[in-house]
Image (cartoon, rainbow, N blue to C red; front, side):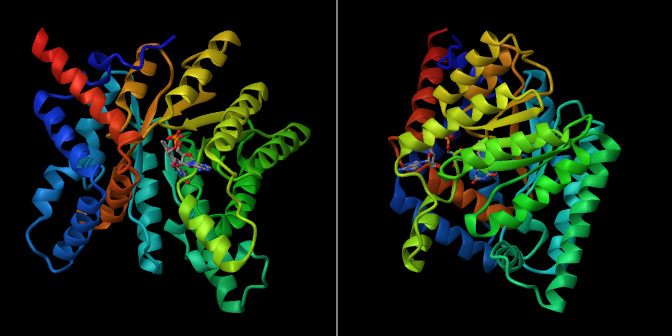
Length: 387
Ligand SMILES: Cc1cc2nc3c(=O)[nH]c(=O)nc-3n(C[C@H](O)[C@H](O)[C@H](O)COP(=O)(O)OP(=O)(O)OC[C@H]3O[C@@H](n4cnc5c(N)ncnc54)[C@H](O)[C@@H]3O)c2cc1C
């Protein structure tokens, strides 16, 4: 049994000042009205170029991001690696729609892969499909509509960006994950990821797709691709998450009058999450990244690996959390020899604001993540005072 309440291990890299900053941040984030007003104000202030960048950078950015550039992340990567926790550099800009931005994101993703090749602290890389191609195009392809000639050309560019990303992956041996996004754009991303796996996941697993278990159809999909992989002799790489767009999914289904793709309740999501993990462990040709802040799911996966005599530090299984959150899981799993790699977001302050606002919004429920973070930080500050 791993002691996820061991705060000495969880916060070994954090100074008292770091912990006090985190305490202040998570307490503020616990107030939904403050988050709403603060987010709007910060976006507005950055847009009209008020000098608040250094304030954001020293507070919420410092908590959840590694830096504005890859180089700025090196200290964090080194520090975490010294405690056995690796990093997945995540260029976190969202919502861009121009070829210029897609090409830039492609190049920066390639830079993270090349950087990883020379850095022991980086086992995997990642990108978002809508970071390299227009959302509307993914949606149209997913709805199986015929593309216009112009759209066909546009799609060729998206494919060529993804080819370049995986060429860097082949060259360096660093596997690359595709994040999952909204269900209405996901079919095209799933098709593309599966085709890449058939081509590239032969000896090594270089391609990982992401499955969101808050969707009631994902367990069946996982079983189907695992069978296909076994029959055709390739490997599956999969990141299993619960899913980040629940309200948006339910709202769109309601507004458009189709059945919601989301599970009926949290218990159903939890059940499928754990069943998916079980499926992955049972299939020898499957490599898994468990992207979760759920203590129960982490404990279950660790127990299953121990009872099945699986290597804790082999390439097949990684636990993954987001930087700035759930260090009690990451650092205690690493202490017990399991592979752990945290998403380390980076990018210009104004461009990562949507990511930071999502983190803040996600953490507003005091009953959930924020409550857990606050309790752990307070416990550690108390422990430090008493020694
Ligand atoms: C490393 C990492 C990578 C990630 N990558 C992605 C990604 O590519 N795509 C993506 O969408 N998300 C991604 N996420 C976010 C993830 O999907 C979850 O939103 C987040 O981690 C919270 O889920 P949890 O497993 O940590 O824990 P928990 O707090 O136990 O679960 C919360 C989640 O349960 C589900 N849920 C809550 N209430 C209900 C309900 N009433 N009915 C049904 N389901 C419910 C929702 O998915 C909610 O986010 C990632 C997370 C991590 C840590």
